[in-house]
Image 1 (spheres, helix red, strand yellow):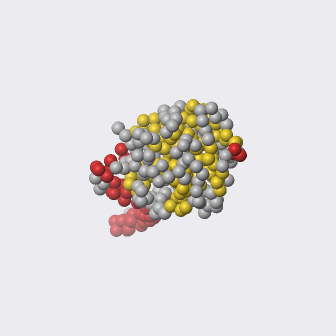
Image 2 (spheres, one colour):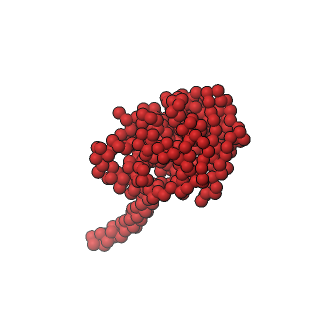
Image 3 (cartoon, rainbow, N blue to C red):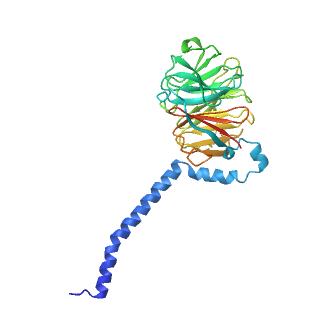
Amino acid sequence: MAIPHSSGAALASASKRPFLRRWSTWIAVAAVIGYGVSIAMHWDDRGLLWVKEHLLSQTEQRASIWLPDYVVDIDAKVLPGMEDDEASDLSFNPFSKTLFAVMGKHPFLVELSLDGDVLRKIPLTGWSNPEGVAVLADGRLAIVDERDHLLVIVTVDKDTQALNIGDFPKYDLGPSADQNKAFEALAWDPLRQRLVLGEERPPALFTWSTDGRSALTGDKQPLPSDELDLRNLSALGIDPRTGHMLVLSADSNMLLELNEQGEQVSFMTLLGGFNGLKKRIPRAEGVAMDEQGTLYMVSEPNLFYRYKKP
């Protein structure tokens, strides 16, 4: 028996309703997920900063580091023999014109050329989990052990082959909000005569006064910053030219520039296709800048990056 036209249309319409309901549900779920991801990745904050960047004058840009102008010229260079060691931080040594990185899983220092070539490896006896390193004013190195909540200041010269934690002064960093995600970042601030320390999660900054040549004085002090809208804090660096701070976040795939007031000035995403990167930096854990403004990074497990301005 033939179905009347009106009845057939009604059946067709009814058959579409479940599909439309499912499609509406999928769109709603995708919207919720997209919103959650955007909040977690702070894309809303990055969008505001992107707008702010484009409002800065050329004079203001030249007075800053200005991360948007940097282009990678060494992309994911492998540090040989360190695939199981977990590169954790990086610092430029102005005396030797080399870089020092710490490896967290199997504790040791590695000295690198500015091209990312391995010059030597220095075992760290007595450290549990070295995560931060900074070169001080007199060439000594400060090393943060995240697991033991210690800051150790060591002397390294051209003949150093190994370091024992018992031979050097140690400073207790005290408890953290999350004992398992404690002090991980460290940088020497020569303009303000202080060490800057960073807790991984929740991201927080502290300072400790020192002239970089003698003992640390007093105790660490919190450094207010309302602009650390990052999922975690992996590493810190100081630009010796401007005094601006570099804040690296592996979880957010982001490098931020903060000015003297702790305000965001510029940023760089660490995803493939941006700033010349072929692929995303897997897990950026260390950042450093030299006197010429060249930018260096290391990523777990054993990758080296260098950025320059054209």
